[in-house]
Length: 130
Image (tube, rainbow, N blue to C red):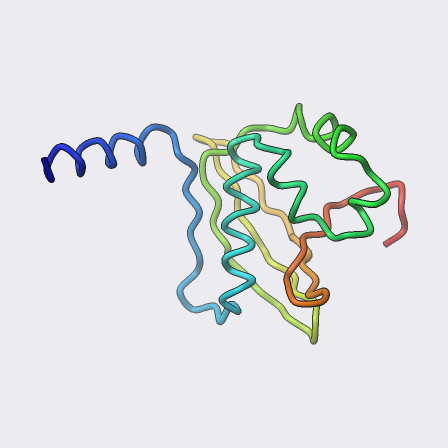
């Protein structure tokens, strides 16, 4: 029974689940690391209703969940992400992430803000100056 469980669990894990890794030399606050993992797992699986919950509150106020899901629906699909860089100042961190899908690679900088008692992602919006 135990071997069957391990086999089924392995198949579920390997069945295209996105892979997110962190540079072991980075000192990432534990709560921030958890938020990054959850956010990018949702984004890589195109579960935008989930990733929307991690966006900073003012963006959730300005943009409806429907608008957000429509905005990201045509985003390229990536199968893995690796956090390469981290720069933190007080309640703000900039995270350098390398996204990959086969030979396709994209490096971007994510911005995360500590508001209240949790970390929130700030997606880039060219319409607003901040």
